[in-house]
Length: 205
Length: 154
Image 1 (cartoon, each protein chain N blue to C red):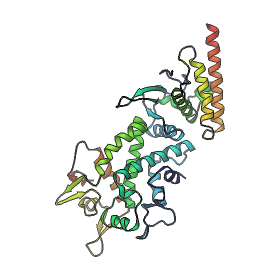
Image 2 (spheres, rainbow over the protein chains, first blue to last red):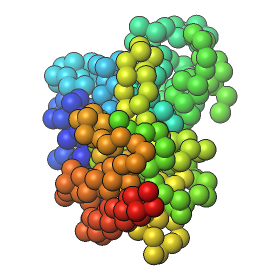
Image 3 (cartoon, one colour):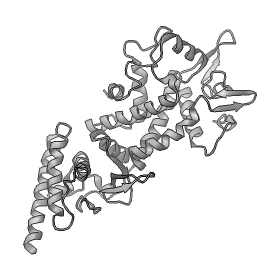
């Protein structure tokens, strides 16, 4: 019920969540499955016993956050099939594992709303999330680029991607450990002051 | 004009809130009405107030404290108001301020509080439980009685 309310409240998730299957294929242009969204919501709720206003409130928090993020990363919004495929080949920005990283941020956003109210928190987080924008270039060892590139060595170092059987193509993992690492990396990155571009400090778990 | 005095009476919860209790209250405000800014201050008593944003624009917001949760008293209707009912009451203060229907603080304070509780029932009808509605009616009755007592005392 909560996940469906999130979709109703979000401009970018409407028609962008696959409700039919639990696994997206190359033919699916949607950003995620309903079961991934449900798992994200489980990560931000501390109890199963939510009354209706709370469910509605939590759905608004999640939808506001997602729409804010999609404004910075358009890959999280609606895309046609060829573009979605291209994004999935090159980036992990819309990978199921990364959705759990976003869920960790969502929880922090919820706390920020409690502290400052929706109005101020949305304004502050609009600035904060800019660090995840594609134009923001990060570096690690000899690599420079978009944080969410599969080729970013950080993701291999923290166990979110690994080389496939051919030793070349990178495979995205969706294990519990990889999900936690996505949350840790994103939260730590957003907690830094100033304009950090070297990702070395995120390698150590 | 709205006042900045606490609008909930003494007798409600005063124990510090855990982070999940704070989130619950914040999400309840949002779920009932996302157009109103509501934020937590551990040292505050719950109040609706008018403030200014960074650009100098005036806006109304609710600052809630631990007393947004009910207290132990079973005979005091205000103390017994549930989280949902108390949130609806505070949100209605915002709308009464915006609509310029709030009564002046001072002599009419209790009357304004009574009208706020009654209006909350209409505004958030369907999102409040029957128990919340009864609690808001009982709160309004208590506030009217307080108004009458104050008037009688001159």
